[in-house]
Length: 427
Figure 1 (cartoon, rainbow, N blue to C red):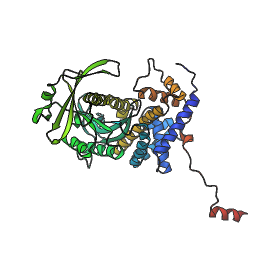
Figure 2 (figure 1 turned 180 degrees about the horizontal axis):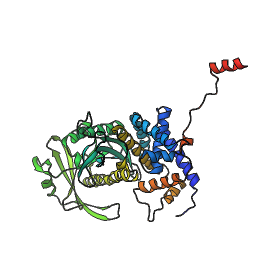
Figure 3 (figure 1 turned 90 degrees about the vertical axis):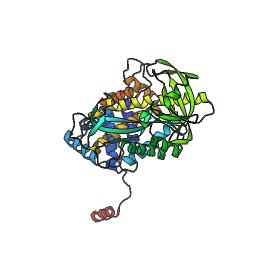
Figure 4 (figure 1 turned 30 degrees about the vertical axis):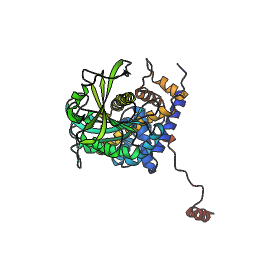
C-alpha cells in the first residue's frame, strides 16, 4: 500500500511524540538534565549513531558545533540521574505489557573495543560474535515482551568490567538484575534464561522468591529422577517426545518438534518439584529446559515452556539492533561512566521505537512511517530496523532539532515584590 507522505507533518509528529516521551521519563529531573535527556535520545534516533558529533549535528543549534559537543560531553560524564530515568521509563513500559503473563528475557552480552586498550577499566571479554577473547566490557540486560506483538522493551541494562573498582563477580551483577526485576514485576512474569544461568545460585534465588522461570539446562547437570541421581541427558534420552509442536522461525522455516514432560528435582534442592521439558527437532541432541511452571495439563505446559524459551531470539535480535543500528560498539568516549550513559540513551531510543509502535500500530502515522522505511519486501515481525531507518530518514529532512518542542518553564503572571517596587519607583 503506497501513499503520499508529508515529511514535514510526519517529522513534526515524531518530534512532538519524542518530546512527550522524554518529558515522561525525565519526571523529577531539573530542567537542564531533562533537556539533555531529550537531546540525547533525539540525536541517537536522528543520526542512528552514538557519536557525540553526530548527535550534536542533528540538534542544529545556532552555535558552533564544538560548543555543542563540549556541552554534551560534559553532561554525559556528569549524568548521575540514571535510576530516576529508568524508574520513569519502566513505568511507561508497564503500560504495554500483561502484568500477569509477561515474558522477561535476561541475557549477558558484550561491547568489544579491541583497538582501544587505554579506555577506562577495559578488560578481557568473550566476543559472542567471533568466539574470541578481546578487550571490552560485559553487559547484562533484561527485556520484557509487549502484550500483543511480543516486541522486546528493555527494563534493565548495565555495562560493567572485571577490571573496575568494586567489581565482585558476574553472578553478582546478574543477581542485581534479577533483584531489580523482582522490585518492578510480579512473580508470575516468566523469567527466561539461557545456559549461562544454569547455576544453583540462580535457581536458589527464583525458588526462594517463588518466581516463575524457564532456564535452558547444560548437558553435564545432574538431576534427581525417580529418587536416583542421574545425568540430565541420560534422563532425557528415556523419552522420545510424547507431544508434537510445529515451530515457524523468523525466516518462515518450519521445524517439527517432539516434546516430553519429565518431573525431576535438583540435587541442591531435593524438596522442590521441577519439570524437565525435552525438545527434539532443533539439532542432533535435544534441547533441555528446566522450569517451575505449574499446570494440570502436561501438553499445555510443554508447549508454553517451549514457546516462552524460543521467544529469546527477539532479545538476541534486540542486542544486535542496538549494536548495528546505533553503532554501540563504535562508541568514542573514554570513561566508563560515559559508556554506561551512552548505553542508557541507546536503550531509551530503542525503547521509544517499541513504545511508539505499540501505541500507534494501526494509525496513518505508522503506515506512513513504514512506507518511509522503503523495504523491498514485507515488513518483518522484528520491526526495529525498519522503524529506526524510517525515523532517521524523516528527521534528516528537517531543518530544526528538537529544541522548539522541549517545554519551557511557565512564567508566573503574578508580580513579585521586587517587581512591584521597581514599577513603583519608576512610576
